[in-house]
Image 1 (cartoon, rainbow, N blue to C red):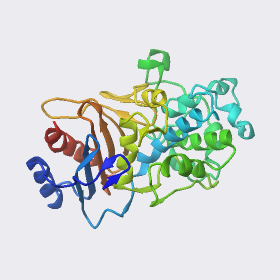
Image 2 (image 1 turned 135 degrees about the vertical axis):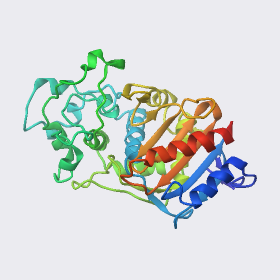
Image 3 (image 1 turned 60 degrees about the vertical axis):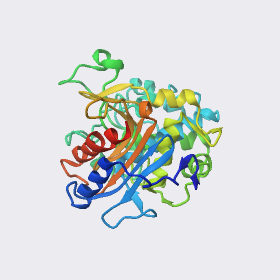
Image 4 (image 1 turned 90 degrees about the vertical axis):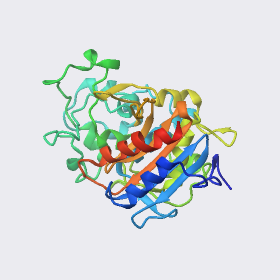
Length: 340
């Protein structure tokens, strides 16, 4: 059986001993609440297991992993001519939402790329509870886009400014930046972003079983929260591995995928960031460059081009301090060595 360009007929046929060992450890609870692990090699699903009450048809809330939906939306809007490029300034698409608070002419220089790379000049930082743009403050506001635009310009009292940072960007994780991208795309295309997503991404990938999340203003929530099946997450990361090609059709341009999956900012030591995609190596004896979708709880959808490998790990280890350590261990100690 072919699932788009993922061949599911080989799932669990001949499981590598390392993956069998991993399976036993997950079942024993060594990694707490893992709900699924899928591994595809050269487009063939070679391992697929569900845990803790999950199954093939279960939809998973992988939290911020679905920020990457904003990347897909942007690429599609550019390819179809609604947006010139991700270097476009955001204000022409948001004339109806000009800043009310903290007006500053520098805000007119903010680009879509700034949002995609979590590096806009506004004072929004989910890693700092003192930040005026922290996501917990945004959730109580009806208009999340206006919330972002009304923030003041940030300063850099404890860090070098963007000009002194790698790639000329200062990364600051912010759900408000991700959420605003859907509003920009919606304004650019002149119709709801969710319908645009369904027609141009989900339908071609044959993704039919999902639950979309929305902001209080009824805009597709690209900060996170939408739910998809594990196999459908696998299709998304496989599409990026295949540089936007699916079933012989170019769903998203290769040029845009190349830009999205190349580093644009340094998130922290050893970890870089593209367009709502994380980038760092995985492996035990040998390290392989990877890009991946990632969310609270250690949820990950990983692509490793050198190995022609895609991986989906879903969990419910939300707010667990070792959640990403668990999934990194699964990648480094079991999945990568079994796939080399």
